[in-house]
Amino acid sequence: MIDPEKIFRVFNPEEVEGKGDSYFDFYQTPTFKLGMFKKIIWNQQNMTDKLDKMCEKMPELRDLINLEDDAGEFVTFARAWAYIKDFDPTQEQSKEALRIFSDEYTKSACELAINYWEEREEYERCAHVKKILDLLEK
Image 1: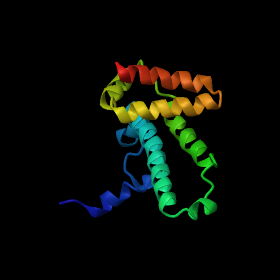
Image 2 (image 1 turned 30 degrees about the vertical axis):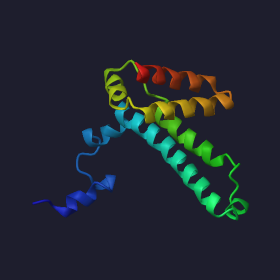
Image 3 (image 1 turned 135 degrees about the vertical axis):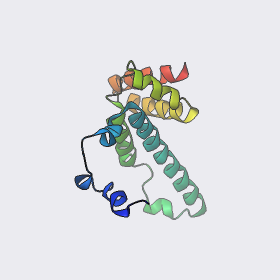
């Protein structure tokens, strides 16, 4: 029988027994970081697509929402960068993460990130993401 109290404690890290053990280490793995990078960028892309479709059906929304404002994009790519900046593609765990996430969506997320940071002349970030993209394509 599952103890519901133990399940709900997982959502409150202060109450988890043995904190600092492998449970929390998962969030530091290259697989988690690469997955979050992909997810954050694609969630933004999906939201932008949905917003565009809504504005096609309801043109008055364009007056209420400034679609040219890139604050949302900045937050998206800055959050994604926070996950990927320490990703070391030479580590064995990172190589496994690259195998797991070697799909078109991850590659597209990398390309979107490169384009975004290239426009802002953040070439070090571009180079880092490009290394990851090159390994994904192998």
